[in-house]
Each structure stands twice: as C-alpha cells, then as structure tokens.
Length: 165
Image (cartoon, rainbow, N blue to C red):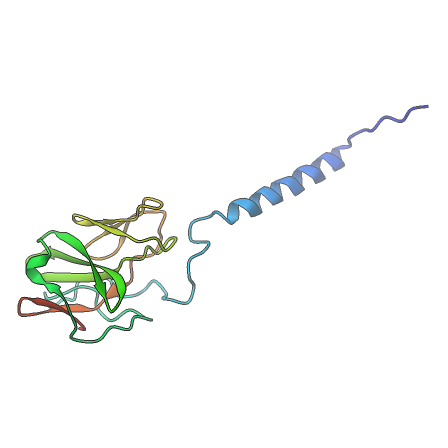
C-alpha cells in the first residue's frame, strides 16, 4: 500500500508562521534607521535659531570638536534664503542664511543612513533616500530620516561667520 503525504492544518500553519517570521526579520534589516548610530545624540539638541538674531544651531552638538572662533565663511558667500556646503574642522557641514544676518550650520551627514546631504535653496536634500531638511533649523521636512541634522554652533563676527556660540 502506498502512503500519501497529507498536509494537516497544524503543519501548514507552522510552515506559514516560520516563513512570515523569516520575512519579517529580513525586512527589519532594511528598515529606516536600522544602521543609525545610537550614541551620538538624543535628538533633543537645540536646532532652532539662537534667539539673539545672530545664529542658529544653539549649543555645540555632542561629539563635535569645533574650535571656537574659526572662520567658516564670509557672510557674503551665503545668499540670503539659501545654504552652501562648507568644511568645519575637517567635517562636511552646511551653512545657511535663512534671513539677512541670521546664520545656522549643521552637519552634512544625514541622520537616516549617514549619506552626505546637499544644499538646495532653503532646504537640504539627501540624495540617497530622499530625506529633506529645513536649512534654517535642520528639522526633517520629509523622511525617511526621523531625526534633525546635528547643529553646529556658529555666529557672526562682523561680516565673517565663525564657529562657537
């Protein structure tokens, strides 16, 4: 007599459940922020304007080694309402002048997957996955990034933009 293999309801549910669990694990590895550093900042860093009308970014970001008073750029190099790419102490950064005489600087490293963010007028764009940030505040305008860009303290010293608060 020949035996015929039968699928039981329990067996089918077990195989289906294991397959679904495996698929969920694979997809979790591709989730936004799955490779994001966890010890850099809590995401509560002051990313608004300085309140004194001279700058944004607030306090120096955790883990940022910025020499106070180092010149970043001339104010005339940053068009009002736009932003530019700069290097601050060897690190890629973005410098914005959201309104006349108000400056802000942020790390140019996207908080989603650490790609280099580029200036795009009043916004900052990540070419890797399409995140967009406000150039004045560093806040996320469109994900997949969930955290704002890391602020870098800058202020005006005459017609020069310098590091420090």
